[in-house]
Image (cartoon, rainbow, N blue to C red; front, side, top):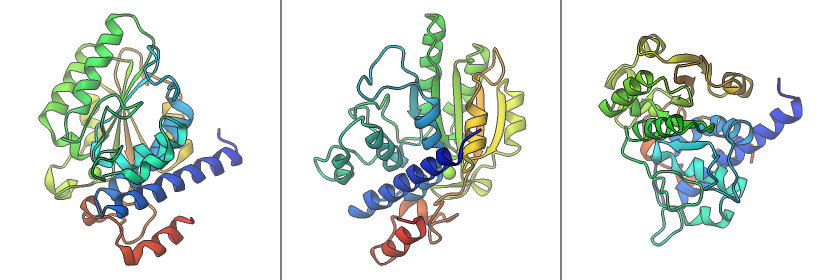
Length: 273
Ligand SMILES: [Mg+2]
């Protein structure tokens, strides 16, 4: 159970991530702001309460491994990593710039980033390899993969899903930022994932389904890992693409666009900055 103060602190951090993502994408008029906004609350709970990571020792052998498979949502992840002290906050303003410190998609050249992603369907297979390696060596760390619904259209993702169940990788947690919008349309119209939870159960994973903007539910769902001993864990987090900014919420445009210059002030107001 979270205290009121903890919830306030989480809300503050989530607003910070969203505001940074709006700023970073607007500076270079780059895209994918909607993808950062939808996962902000998940990132807050992961980095504040769940992941065993140390910003000053990002390669520590006992750290939990975290891979953002939806690498196009780099702005959101970079924001919380800067906040936690993995690298200086002024790097955020170099996002997407020529010779900047932070590439447009997630890069392992940034301290604390495990793997470069961007092409969908790569995160989970790599995560499965890491989890299998950890299991075979008797390691205690966990391996997390935050995916998009677009990731779940990829054949490589489904190969990884089968392999994880085959090897009973209960040190692996996959979280889907299920905002139901992807690059070219609404997920139900591109490749419908439903009945998603039922499919994942049949594929041998332990599944939970939550509101991905409810801090209590996110924390409760991740408080005991694995969800079921001997099975990989799958968290379907229902979210809203572009969450927090009305001109972006639940729109396909928010995948590719940033908040336009003339909408910036209203966007920050809506976030409460
Ligand atoms: Mg999506």
